[in-house]
Amino acid sequence: MKQPFRMIMLVLFSLFIHGCATQASSSNQPNQTVLLIDLSELAKATGKQEKLNKQMKHAENQISEQMNELKSKIKVQLEAEQAKASAAATKEAEQQFQMFLGQAQQQLQAAQIAANSKIQEYRVKLLDKYKREIKPHAEKLAKARNASLVQYVDEKTLWFNPSVDITQAMIKILNSEKKAN
Image (tube, rainbow, N blue to C red; front, side, top):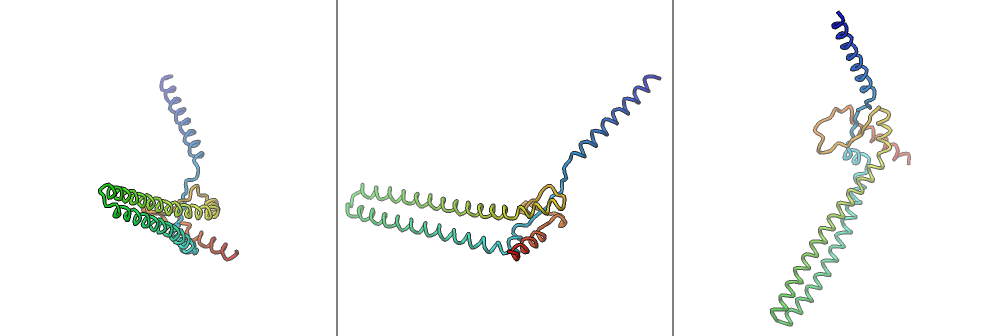
């Protein structure tokens, strides 16, 4: 008789401990609601996309001008080196010109890679600045909806419930803020 009683008490005690642990772990879990913002739609609807495009175009034009200046300088140098090689009319002079030509091509390729990198860095910088601008508004909406996370809709997003999309609410907030200023 003592054995079954002990067994029942052990089982009941285990269930009690398990129940307490489960309740404690579930009460410690933070709210897992995730909200989504479509940055592209937000930027278009608030007029920010046009401003960002103008800034990018301006940066691209500046870099393009710098590249054209470099190409012009290299072209002048190449013409001078070619004139030297033609005047000398030796195999050694032709080899030096070919070597200079190869170096000039490498310099242009390196400059083009650096220019593309600068453009990409500037694009990322503009996008990061825009994200910082909208962050306080997204945070307010998230807190009002008891959400723990706001993410951007991007190419990795396959599907989401429209109820978690705060893009339209953000558009209203940003447009009203723009009118107030």
